[in-house]
Image (cartoon, rainbow, N blue to C red; front, side, top):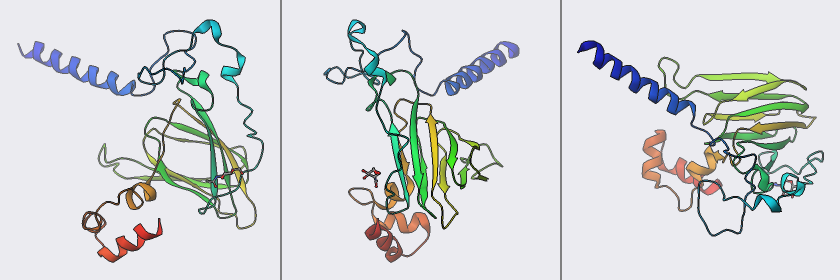
Length: 223
Ligand SMILES: *[C@@H]1O[C@H](CO)[C@@H](O)[C@H](O)[C@H]1NC(C)=O
């Protein structure tokens, strides 16, 4: 009796663990499933274009990823090549980005809800880091950071808040990132929390951040 219930507990635990381990883009069930962007059918991802009509251009994009980009107001520019740019990425669980950093520029704290990211520095230096979740204790909200030089590689685990900062006041930096989703998504923390449309009530945010409401109003106006 006791052993059969502990067996059930073990089976339930194993089911939970294997479910967590597959929390990413689903595995393909055919060689490819090039996205048919014109289909009215809604599925998880996109439905497949007729394989007889697939050609090399479905797996190609003249993306000029060798060319520098113009940085935004926080001093970076992310050029993401996902399933919207290359329809052949549909169901394959992968995408790529070029990230440009101005001197002292940053790719601000953000998360990818659907992808782990592996980043390599092509030019310059980057100070990078991520923060763990609240589980498991006592590892909660632990900050792991590193200074990367040209040629170095760093991993940001799926879902965790991370950033990259170029500490050099004179030289730009460039990185290439690969992401484990055809559509990684990005939640930029400052934009989502203080720049949502419509705005989150300042009553909520003042309590959440334990500051005065005018501090929240200032941040909301700025973003
Ligand atoms: C990124 O760079 C491209 C090309 O230089 C530019 O067209 C685009 O507006 C830039 N994006 C941002 C957010 O500044």
